Image (tube, rainbow, N blue to C red; front, side, top):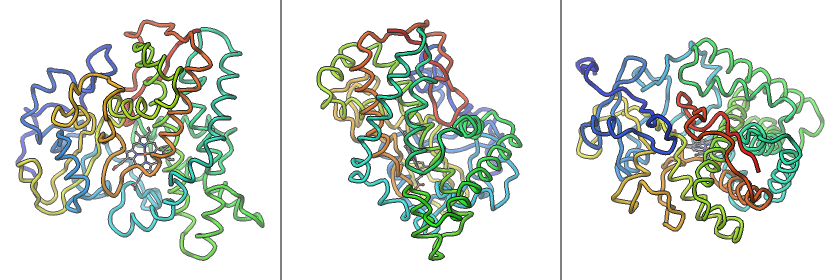
Length: 407
Ligand code: HEM
């Protein structure tokens, strides 16, 4: 790896062109790529292979030749890794491999199955309704991110886990730091430590009670911690992962989706007139917006070929979901937002063993939030110049940090 000269390589991650939040990579950056599997320079000084075609990304993410363990030396990092103890990483199974990963993931599979998510749809509907009532009663113009996009998934994941929503400011501030690749590594370490000790106290309180509660954390305490299958340190890490993944992602999808839909009034009309069509619209939004824009990092653990390139054991590799989701071999007119297309092959939730466990929940939240908004605020419109909207270019999860609207 040492012999790769990084000076001439294009710098990754790429940014959207200026005022356009919907184009993941500028034409100039695309022209600098040396083929569909190409080397790019990382802001941390190293480099990574970038895999950009749909079929290559799928092959890579389902192959056991790659590790997702970010603690491995040589793993592609977008920021200097904070000096974190092994304890700080415990339970965070998104960055684990093999049996270690499967053991923890399996404990959550049933919780997130479609049939169980259907059961909580009335709750999601209630959360959306209440949030809209409060939003409508407030001043205009209003920020749709702070007033709707963020509280809805946050309230839902808090309810599901059994975390008090009253503490949302505490964990939202820290999750922004965790996802910000320009954040100081020490600030990231402190944010992780703060969140872990908060969740640790919450879990201890639940354990101290005779019945830990009928929520996900309570059930894991009763069914896994008490029989000795799961350690408290692991449960804390799982709760942390779900809390961050559960609200940041869907919140950013809602904000960006509303901005896009306001520019496609016929689709907005369609959501209002026929909510049954919402599933297709949501799938195309997931493809077109691909909010995990900076891709999925991995490291080859043996020599392997991807897209005709030889990747050697130890080399860093990144699956660029945003370009794979615009692959013209799979999606006709891939650069167009077209809710009439069959978008279900998209890779916005990743692929393979780490594919998003929360996808049935995310889909339900997006469908209920967007149809609710279209029905209750038919006159919704932007209250700012789209070119001035603050974008989260440095975040691992792309989105808007504000969306001023009126109605
Ligand atoms: C639109 C919203 C969402 C998007 C676009 C999204 C995207 C992703 C992606 C791309 C991955 C794969 C990461 C990798 O392979 O390295 C992932 C994994 C994961 N997601 Fe999501 N996600 C969303 C919503 C959610 C929600 C609502 C939850 C939880 C309640 C969640 C929990 C997780 C977890 C726990 C993993 C790790 C799975 C594993 O490693 O086995 N996500 N997500």
